[in-house]
Image (cartoon, rainbow, N blue to C red; front, side, top):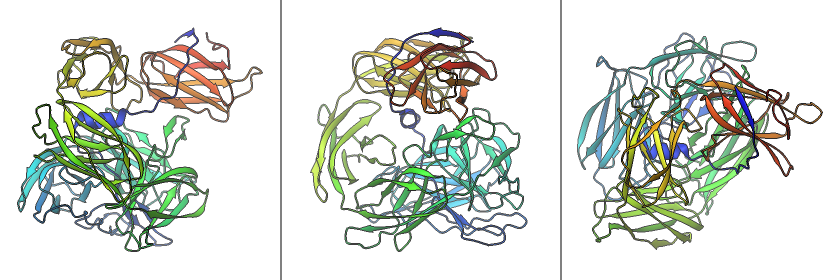
Length: 615
């Protein structure tokens, strides 16, 4: 480990990697969590609630002492124009063509309004079969909860049967216990989407011994646990090659409970509204039992019942964000304080939506289909989104009053953006004309020259706003098909890593042979530790620590524990800038550090305004 003193000013920047990754990958796996309700084996006490799911066949848990858990069906999809619908039957198979039960299948209907917000889910029954009725004709994307997916087209009135193959993965097993070491039966095991720790769903329940067993789990996912009477667990990163060693997850207590009711502006209940808590970033960060800093519980979603009611029973204490959306109503956002124990109530009043409609065409006025038009960040829980029809038309709803940015984008055209003033209950007309741009491409390789697949490459103008993304192919090649003329900084990201893993500065649009060689394999990560003290050597708690690549705008924020120490896992070896800021201070203490493959890599003791004792 080498330390170099410098003076660097770093501004806080929003992390947008996951949204861009989704756009670059074209994955259909992202989506809100689903709902599982249940009780402990003895049936005592109120049941827990985790998310929401469209269930075609009843979920059963075949474990001694744990009764089958009925799962209520999801609210029916909102009506979309026209009456012709399709029917889709999905058969989940493993690599040996054998049926696989208890797999959640996700369905994206791209012709629906707000397709990402209205993603549907179904659980495979004993024969691996899931049926989706009332399917919107057009392009569909299917994905299994732990890996595998396909894209297909379906016509109005058609009944289609397809096989969804579950790729071979690792077996993830473990046991969930409370603080006294007593097994927790009936706990919900939550698994994230590929490379996206914010989105996921409960995939199974623990048995009478508190144990769980997941087969064929894919790479770059996180795992969390929820159980009635306990605080939701932190998220555990499974990595590129998840270990098959059993996990032992300890749940803390007590947990806070949030209940409420959603009504319209006439005080009538709104059934089927989606309520999401922790929707911005989840529930913060904290040190786990092993002392390693981890992300807190993921965002949780549920649907309101016939009376507009909703409930969450496993929340950690503290402030959290809450978002409510329902077709025909403006999106509602606020925050709520979750108590250490007990319950807090929240009434939500949804107002009328604002709407934007229009047409998208190219420079010659020809209509463009399959163009993404969105208000807000792509894939964000509070975004409204549409995909243009073949005649180039789109419609955005659920917009709240105020100024909103509307973006039209496609990989083969330059994007366009306008600012509009939305008025509740009114519809605004907005057309777009998209122009073609220049391609930017190259290859990402390891030090031996081997191409690296499944990495995200982001091109950002050296001087100017915006960013464009692509994903590397099997040989490490990437192509960003349409960017404006100019010079770009090209940054490489790997799933599971908050900070980027490589970069190439000063790449001109139109360049096709940029070679980015990573300093190290993306699998060689280490744990970094450090301690912060004041001028008298006393541990400092009220300090913000930021870790950053010298050539990147993305920051990793860390908080020290009560002893002034912070620990962060899954950091690649390489050069970083560590910045320490104390509340109310006008200056920051910054240091350039080189992280080596030591496990763990201890950066030593930092005195605010001074270099490390190791330096």
